Image (cartoon, rainbow, N blue to C red; front, top):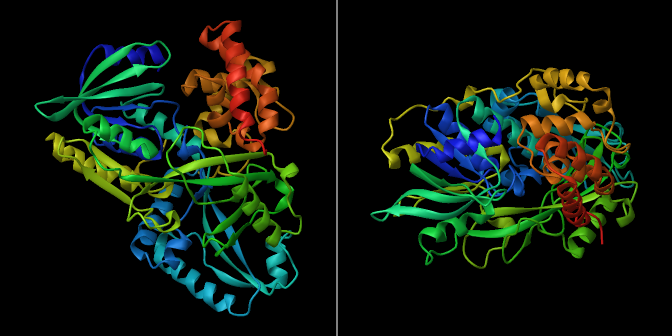
Length: 518
């Protein structure tokens, strides 16, 4: 549906059953859950869908091997179940990937082998394949570029991989399929209360400057790192719920792994798990866990974080990556639920916290992509009680996500569109020029810009190059080169002029420079 028609629904002033603030994984999952139960649902996002943390993950749908090490079996069990459901409900976006733990000490084989067998056991019928010990030769066949000196063998296990922002867009489309409304670039400016209880909000359309007063039976705060900002719109005296931490990922050429399997290092110098993962023809290395004083939309990597990841990658790869090898660097913020002030962020809870304020504001905090559906289910159940809505059961465990198409996940062209790929192919047939690549180093064509603008609510060059496609993450320099063509294609769709194009290119170039090594 066109943006003007979506905005008209706000102008008409209906009473929504549920209003969700935040268009990341948690907000989208909550809105889909609400709409799938038949509640009249509105989602508002201040920027673009998944603009923040939800487009900057390690691209894994996993139970959490580190949580298993910590003894948090309930979180692992829940995440493994959700992993299985997601692979079933979004096979065009989530697929099975093998991970290899390289072993260099005699004790590592039995230690990690037993732990990963427990991982298999917890997954049960939703498991993706059994773990097993590998010889040195078998390990090198799976990950040919792993450091062979001192290598004794490996342990292989299975987890899920996905494209995070493409899943977010698919969830926004699922919400629309269910009759809900999702709007990006609508910033919540205030929470409205009636007799002390939350009864709606005001929101500013960042494109036009128009402000809307929107009424709802319940308001759900799913703003991720910005949860406390929303809470303080109701009560400025509230203590902070979130302590932010940033995680950095390096993007290298695919030849640094040169295979289909990922490397998992269970214990780095700071106690984190390190991954080197093949993704869209590249190698992603991550991640860090660095406390930061406050959340921002565009966090920047610290020099020491880059050095940390390069040093650890060099320990385990035969090719030692340098700064000059980096194609892109992306940074996300984890909205970790605050514990005591002395805890380091690597030890804080990744589980989700559901909070109902005395004002009736429902806040959902913490969690991760893997468990977004369960977070949404818990949140909507609580919100329906607060709003006095008819109790209805959850159906999302069996709900197919927009684009569902069996057996298409991988890195083939257009595969992330799932069943929409056929309509996209028809679009490309309208104009042969739309089949031309945006850049020789990028796997995207001009027609995907048209599709993202017409069908997926892309409003800016950044929306296209960072989230509808993943160009910015795959190669920041190439994406800068592609920006003028993207701006021209979008302008033709949105009715914008040359001034708009120049402003868009300038803004994107400034943004993309932050993804380049310094």
